[in-house]
Amino acid sequence: MNASLGYTLRHARRGVVKSLLAILLALLLAAAVGRLDALRRHYDALCHSVEVKGVVSGGLSVYRAEKLGEAEEVKYTYLEYLRQGAEFLLSDDSFHSCILCFSSDYTVNAGAEAEWLEGWDQERFQTATGKVCLITEALAAELEIAPGDRIRISADTYLNVLRQGHPEASMEELLGIYKEHRSPTTVVGLVPNENFPSRLWLPIHGMGVYSETFPDLKVEYAFYTLRDYEDIQAFRERFLTETAREKGNPSLYLDTAEADRVHRMANLLNTLYPIAVGIALLLGAVLPGLMVLQNSRETAILRVLGMSRKRVCAMLTGEQVLLCILGLILGVAAAFFLGAGWELTYPGLHLAACLIGSIIFAWVSTGKDLLSLLQAKE
Amino acid sequence: MNALTLENVSYTYPGGTSPVVKNASFGFEAGTIYAVVGPSGSGKSTLLSMLAGLDMPGSGDVILQEENLKSLDLDKYRREGVSIIFQAFCLLPLLTVRENVCLPMEMQGIPEANARERAAEALVKVGIEESKHKRFPSALSGGEQQRVAIARSLCSGAPVLLADEPTGNLDGENTRIVMDILRRLAHEEGRCVIVVTHDPEVAEAADRVLRMKDGVLTAE
Image 1 (cartoon, one colour):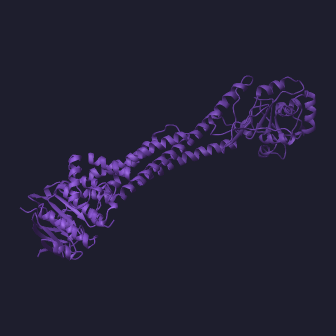
Image 2 (cartoon, chains in turn red, green):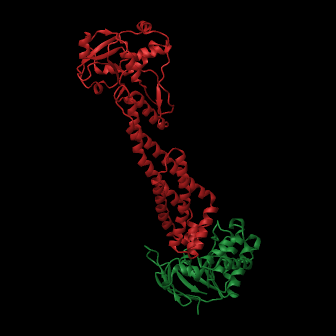
């Protein structure tokens, strides 16, 4: 046993290039699979933790947005300050109290079929850019508005943006400035929604209206990224805390299209992950085995010197497993620093694959015709 | 008592129709050097394979001293009964000269210090100076590598030494050196040395010549 162990250790130590290759292989596979797994888990967590409704705003005011981070996978949402919007709206009798809803998925969020103005349909509403709106039948009756009428929406959403450019202006001055810039909005449909009689829907794409109407104002978007996932959680908690005081339980909403991309990415990663693991395990089994086969001549020498087939197999397997363990330790550490946790399922499977591959190839290698291997010139 | 005895040994390859070794019978004595000669395909390598315990005869018996190969553990037979020298030297490239020579003794469980001492003696005996004992085989000439292989066989303590074209890769001078060593092993240490060769010069250096032709072994 000492001779076998001594030979194995000497072989691993002196065959530096092959040993490093074996270690590197295990390291790279463990690190890559670990990183992929971490990414997959983050996307899964994201999909399950953020509410996606296709509505940007539950109501009132884009007062201030915060830039949280930048990365390749950028999604946007608007930070809604419902409390401030509601206070502003309700503090002035000249405003009719209603809730503005920005929607890219009208059917779901209105909860009813609209009666569209002739020539208008849902699809056009969804792709419009803020010059059209829908109102509830109750609100239309109260305000004596019919489809096709043009109204001027003096929403706090816009006024608050405008206020940023004119911090000292009075409300009357703000309204004056607003009327100069803001063109009327056409009512294109009525919604029979008795549960929410004071609602008015605007297309989600109306965000561009801000820069169109007030080019001197910079409207920032709130970005979040997967990389800043922890920040997103904190952001979401803060958002809920700050906005829940006056208005029920508003949530962080994602644009539907962007959320779909997150879901698609999560699905893709969940599909790719087992395939990647399968390929990695195959490589983890076959490549050490090929290294074992490369040593066929040395194996034959050991057999001719009288070492038993089982013992030679154990030596060959032991060397590969030893190198694999070293590589996996480094690979798991590398994956950890790349953002993965201490996930040991894959390294365990990789080690098992290496063990099985090495045993099979070692058995094949030791079963070859010894004489022909040894008679061949080096 | 013969060191190694063949009794009606025949061998047919799996799927083959006619035997490549036919009823070979011969007694190899200790202290003698034999040359087995014959054209390619005559069955020399197959015979060597059976003598070395790498293959079992299809029929007949190979007897080491008084023990039939069939009743022996083949690994132990190769470890302690016979030792083989190849044309291509077959040293382990990642072990030093001394480690190569020590390996068979380590496999027999001989303590490391003893093994080293015996390896050093064997290496000196075959003319490998001490300064080369810690080198790797690739740093030695072909003749030196073959002498290391002989030293390794020497240290195994096997009573039978098989050599498969041991001088095939060597020049004239090294051929003479190697054959001198093999003769000394036979005549001075009492080993039975069996050399398979094409080289008439090597055959001439043997005490007895055996000829293989179409699977038939004949003593001259």
